[in-house]
Length: 183
Image (cartoon, rainbow, N blue to C red; front, side):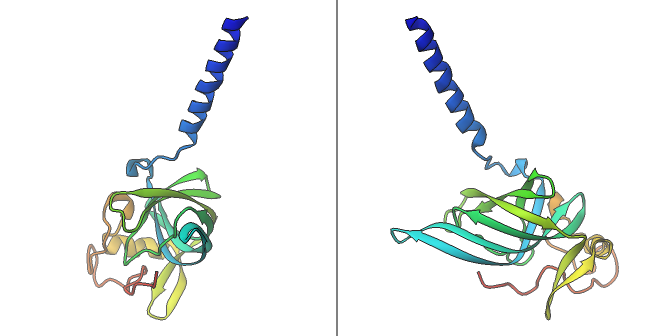
């Protein structure tokens, strides 16, 4: 009888450890094949004992998947503040629930080499967002993809900065913001 109680307790402990290990999100960039460019967001930061405790908000982004960009409206509840992308910067992401929830790997600002994960509830659009000097607009996915091909821009495959006049003639105005947004 005593052995079975000990065995049951050890099995419970192993189960709890496995559950904890499985629920921890990977911080390995290679586990996040998609890229997310955040154009803008609004957020509220909650503090505890004068330290930021969590941030909740919503925003707009382009999600790069399978060589195409699709606009995404999102909302989130994270442990740290979410920052907009600077220039053409993209953040690694992967689907938790395809089309519904993304896990995004974001840097902890001020702490080089440290990352946190945040879950974004998403609404994927049938167009891509394009930022111009007059603000954000929508653009058909096929046109955005042509721009990506002409400028040799493919953040999923390490081509993180468009090349003006890349593979084609004169490139159209950049869709992902020559101007940075306040953070």
